[in-house]
Structures are given as structure tokens and as C-alpha cells.
Image (cartoon, rainbow, N blue to C red; front, side):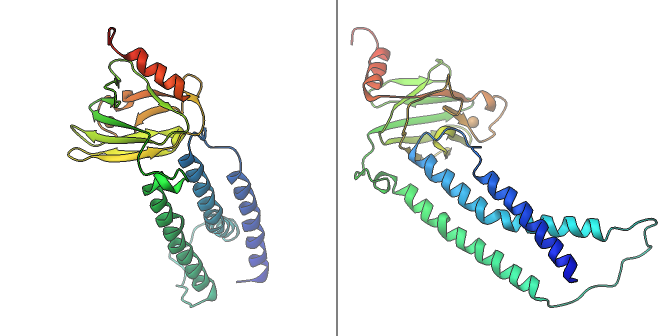
Length: 256
Ligand SMILES: [Cu+2]
């Protein structure tokens, strides 16, 4: 490749990369409502930081080539002669991109999965048992959330999912018809609800939150499951422990 072209492409690449890397640190994410969300956002940023130079390199070369060697006037009848070669650029490109891909599969891919699956201890809470386990049942097109004390909230009852802050909360998830997916954007956590088996996800909410002020506090089905899939959602509220106890008590039937 001609030196002038090489320098031009390199400058274009550097410029696009600088813009892209700046965008990574723009505040584009929803509310960070849990330890898991902190992890996922930093993983997402890490992958963007690594991926942006690869992406901008392709864009720079294609854009520069399209502008510089475009056909003016009448197009030729046939293709040009084939170009065959074993240049150093493709070899380095292959080595770097393959290396990056394998690297991110291991970290943060496998290391992140391992951390999530040992979530109870990985976040320094030093315990295996959840503070609160909620059994979740999904069906077309509703959710029900059963609390340990027998309280049940659901879409049809206009309920809201209330959980205490700074506690380790585990959702055990089932479906009785098709595949649904339990997703709470503020926590960045999502797990499929699969008929015939129980899946789970755990969250450590780190701050108070309320759907009425922030729509990332909601349960949303994230697996297209039919006509009313979009209505398969519930507000979420993260409250202090005493507010949580009061909320549970307020839902108890009178006289108990
Ligand atoms: Cu669904």
C-alpha cells in the first residue's frame, strides 16, 4: 500500500477510535441498582474499549477505500484482476482479533460466570444462604411472586415486587407454559423461565429505587412469548428492611 494512503487511513482510524472511546465513558447506562449491575457495566465498558479499535479499523479502511478508489463516470464491464498475496497486515489482523476473542471468552466471560454463580460469597457477604427467596412463576401473560410468608404479588392483582436493600435476594423461577425471561434492568440480571425446571438468579440491591421515579425498576418479560408479552411486567421497589417488613405486614389478610 502507498505510504500516503497508509498514513491517511491511520489518521482516520485514530480519530474514529478517539471518538468511540470517549463515548464509552459517556453516561449511557440505566440506573446502577445492584452489585451485579456494577459488574456488568464495567464488563460492558471493558468489551467496548477492546472492541472499538477493531470496529473503527474496519470502518476507516472501508470508508477510505470507497472514497479514494470509487469509480467515476461509466462503470467498467468486468471485474478487475484478482489480488493474491500474503501480506503482513492480514496476518497481524488475524492474530490480534483472534487473540482478543479468545481472551474475552476467558475473561470476563468464564471468570464473570463463575463469579455470578457463586454470587453469595463472591460479593464479600460471606454466606451461602439467601436472605430472601422468592418463588417466581411465569405464564402467558403474567408473573406471580410468592414470598416466604405466603404473600403473593402478581400482574393481575396490580401488585409490585418489593425487596429490601442491601440483602441477598434469590429468585427461583418457573414457567408453566412457554419460555419467558425474568429481567430487571436496574439490576442488569436476566434469567429464562423454562417449563419443567427451576432456574434462579440472585441480586444484591445497593440502593433504594422505585418504578414511579425510574422505569429501570421493573420486572419485564424478555422473551417474546405471545400476544400480551409486552404487558408482562410489574413495578419493582427497593426499600429499607423496616419498610419491607411493614409492606409484608400490610398485605397480610386482616385478623392474622
Ligand atoms: Cu413472557
